Image 1 (cartoon, rainbow, N blue to C red):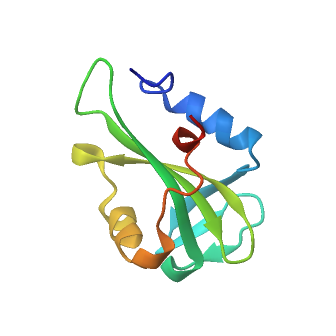
Image 2: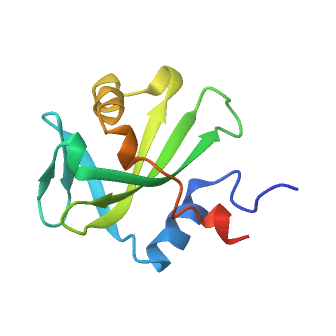
Length: 113
């Protein structure tokens, strides 16, 4: 059975926002930054509590990962990152540095089913 969100990231983003993951993050100068508060995070400050991967509908090379994130100071939000041919290599390397113990799927909305 196909998941209702399999084709579009926006459905997942909206659902996570409804669950309180409202912060938006961006990557700059080797730090993840909360776009509202400008708080900066290093890999050890990040907890990835779910992730969802997508392939483009019209072009399978358009691939992305939606990360659902909590931080050590309680910020909760999302980050959408391209992967495959469109990957930001510096951002990918940043996410590889997140301690394995900080990665889970405990908040995945797929667990609600």
